Image (cartoon, rainbow, N blue to C red; front, side, top):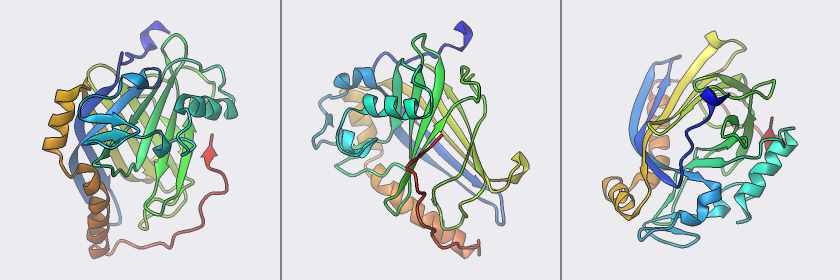
Length: 264
């Protein structure tokens, strides 16, 4: 197990990198954007604030607990532990590292936040993928190996799709996730398959960033180099939707949200 022990961050980090998205059919569609995101060990949440990044109040960048979990500002680590327990994973009692976009000038939209859940030995055992759509709906996918074993770097985890995310995709099929988290890079790769097999891949998405210490200097650098980043997330979603519409990709009506907020 020692070889699978995660290289956990010792404090909050800022990762700078890219989001890459590739749709394979019925029209080929590809885009890549530069992004930055936070990687926060929840046991070190109190170390988050600096001159340009605040916790629970306005700043250039900010982090608010009410944007996550129960959405009521309550303890995020308690919420994560409750999701694990409901999935039969109460034995996962180590560090939880939250990867997410911060608020920028008070605004944020997180298509996906990832909660990396480790055991007491520091090995990755589960990931909670908290997915939001542009209709104000969300769904949490608790991902783990079927036998509860350690998740090896780059190993694939699958789950059924539950939430309507794009009007150009139906709510069917499954997602395949793989993760690499260390001191060199934070990588999440997500395949969406609209059929039962791996050959049914429709959309390939990669979120990757190089971690650096989250301090006043790196925070100000991120803000000045990406001044409209979080506002741009929503704008880019609609711009890419327009381009898919122009390519005559079929459009599907939004179904009701899933009955349950979390699947595992």
